[in-house]
Amino acid sequence: MTRILVAHEMDLVTQGVHHVLATNSSCSVVAECHTLNDMLDVLKSAPIDILVCSEQIDPFQDTVRLTRLLRSTAPNVHIIFIGASNDGRLMRDLFHLGLSAYLHQGDPLSDCLPAAIHAALRGSLYLSPTANTEYIVAMQASAHHWHIDEEAITVLRLLAAGGTPNAIATEMKVKRRHIYWICDKLRYRFGAVTNTQMVGYAIAEGYISPPD
Image (cartoon, rainbow, N blue to C red; front, side, top):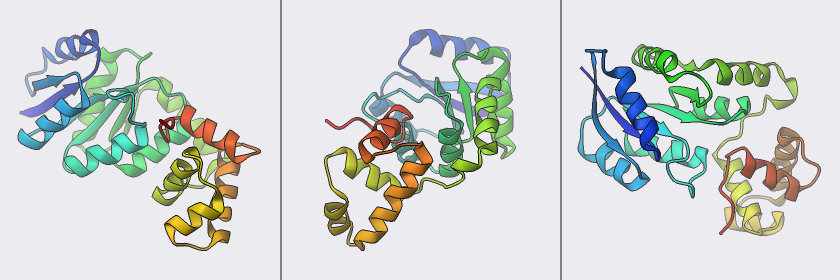
């Protein structure tokens, strides 16, 4: 029996997941949550095979940070996100971090969720049709092949918090030219002219959260 945790801020979606899986005798929704903290508590205390989670379960967590948090909390759980992102580059990076599937909220849950669960259990990745289209476009765009790693995310967050490249280099204990190189790659990756514009794009695409 595949044990599923559903975590979404909207009752309509959690009820929809229950309805879709009601006829699947091999799957059981063992818990549902509506907040990040409740979800983490369940992941720490109950045996879960698959997490079906809203990428906006916590508005203060960007999608990249949320994925890292879930992977560190429950490294063996397959994560399926439901969200509204149209950025194939972000989906690529989420897969690199350990996401199993991404379902665009505009695609039919009844068709996509069973397929995503089946793929996750086989160790395959899955994208719903809308998400898959964006992913393919991103993979074909030669200008965006550079992967945004954890170091680059840290630089983005420090820039968003008001840090300068020189100050960031000091804080991260690396050479200034290394931070300037990362900033150059990030501006190229986001198609930005300035660091401020780049940070804005990174926030809009879900790589980092807006500064407090």
